[in-house]
Image (cartoon, rainbow, N blue to C red; front, top):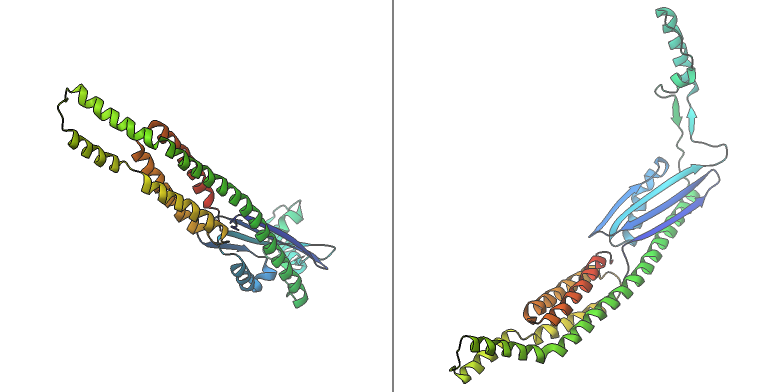
Length: 290
């Protein structure tokens, strides 16, 4: 069963003084492209978090973020009362000395001053970190479950599209004999138009055989059928097959293009156009396969 690279996981951990929300988003990418946004209190654990993510997620553009919401009366941000008093005294002294009017809204002025707000970052203890780790693992699990669900939908889509291409390939065979007869009739008609009635019949048959062999598509049909079967078996073999499926889709495209250039028959070319359309939809979606 294939998996999609697209995924999402979100878990909130309840702690005595705060809520920690872990969120992971993943989109398609050729490699694993990981970016993290971690609050200052958990910066020391960043390498552990990255290692956990790298071990669990194979490919994709992954955005990891943690948000902390403090609850109750506790907050790590405090006013620096000494600094505020100091700024107040200095401004008052300067205003008197220079005969400048004192500000009307003191708080607006003072709170803009440097260092009037200080953040008290406490160390994360082992019990708290254990809860946060569980939340990270749960978010990863949610993301992987999302990837599996998306992969199931992609697999059904691919199976349907490959089936449509295989059906088109089968329909081509109904026009094989008709195509050869039309080519033969067209050549004879052209010979008659130029009054070439006295042509060598044996030589004509030899040229016809050579011409028909050049337009023969049996090898292309055989290879295309094999590629379609290989695509299905690769898809069913498990996750981590995205790149391989992309390569097989390219080979399928080569055979379909050759069929189109060799067909030399309007109905066959219409079938080939339909096969190309199905393949393009596969190519668009295979980029999202893990």
